[in-house]
Length: 58
Image (tube, rainbow, N blue to C red):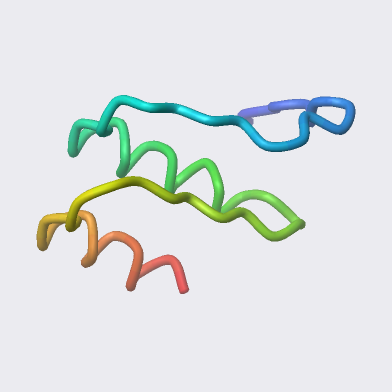
């Protein structure tokens, strides 16, 4: 069982480099396990693999 404990009010985390496909898919998988709202924002357009993963997690 994977246990990731939440940060105490992390606020906004800004990441200025574009994510790789692997990183973005992992972030989506981790965000899908959260009980609260997660908003992943980046510049550019996601590839089909990223859009497919996001669609599976909705």
